[in-house]
Amino acid sequence: MKRFLLFTFLALSACSSERESAGRKQEEVVPAAVKSEVSTTERVGETGRNHAYIRRFYMSKGRFYVTLDYIQFLTGKAAVAAARRKGDAQVEVVNGDSIYSVFDDHYIVNDIIRPRTFPLSEQATITLWDTSSDLRQYSATPAQMLDKGKALFRYAPFIVETTQGRVTSITEQYVP
Image 1 (cartoon, rainbow, N blue to C red):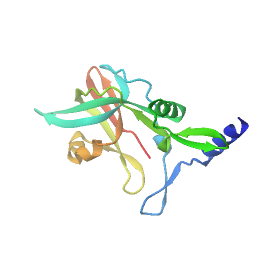
Image 2 (image 1 turned 60 degrees about the vertical axis):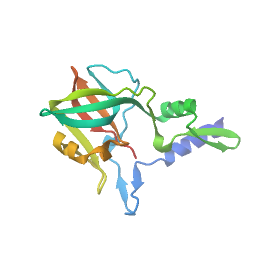
Image 3 (image 1 turned 90 degrees about the horizontal axis):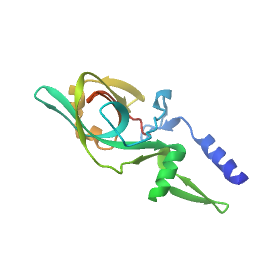
């Protein structure tokens, strides 16, 4: 057991907030703002803050709409536990002990696929990640988001805030 704790401590100590950029061979410092927010439930309502995939972002009759598929975005022990339940955890045997982990310390659960469409509030804020040079967040307008097309939404989870049935905030979840 002592070896397991030591290995876990060493493995966590080896984790860094820096990553090497593929192809550019330079290190990027990941800002403190990228600390992931953990989802606790897939239950959603007219007002709340939840993780979701954006399945569709469109404009109809002069209004923007977003179709969401709510998910659980898990990190750390919760991510490993969920991945183990689903048989997706990576396992490594060290000195006879099984060590379980998940890639990039996050795991997404999407057990209930139920798209829901909400109008976008006129005062909604949209925050995305720019990973093309220095890693940074930037604000986007609904029109800019629409121009980005489906490629932006394909795999990226978002933190979506709704108030009284309208989307008031969309923030792209940083995923290494």
